[in-house]
Length: 115
Length: 117
Image (cartoon, one colour):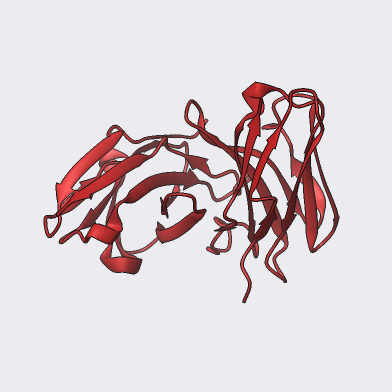
């Protein structure tokens, strides 16, 4: 069964500082990986996704993520955080075959940005 | 383009009452998903449809929950009877093709916030 672990429930960073949110996945085949962001009272917005090719993926809002197969990780990064980045971030994994649409989400990491 | 539209945005109901949540997917999308989000369990896929046909309902918690998609532009998630433990945010989402096979994005609605007292 596929699963996602986001070990950090809550992270606080200063505005302008760099950010890395951790994501580890478990999947028996080639994983398709996603990062979503959820602002308070809102739905989920896709930040970026990895399907194949270059393991460093660029997304919206200046975010990037790197797929490391050997570590089963897909960490999200941003070089300089803005106060508007405060939100909850979800990592998700899906597959290429069968019930591919069954995205499995991690429990989320809540990001707080201090000024 | 309008995104995924859900109604109601907020609902407070008494235990035992029937609750119906509604969803209008993005026009042209052939996949529709219902997710539930709680503090304890995070985001869970309840059921998804392809071309209005339910494909996988293994995430539906129990018989009190049912979902329908009578046409390509409308779906409902019904809880009857509702219980306090059903309190959660219910998200509807849609995509064109599966998010994995075709590389397309799953678009989420803003959610229906359900409180059962």
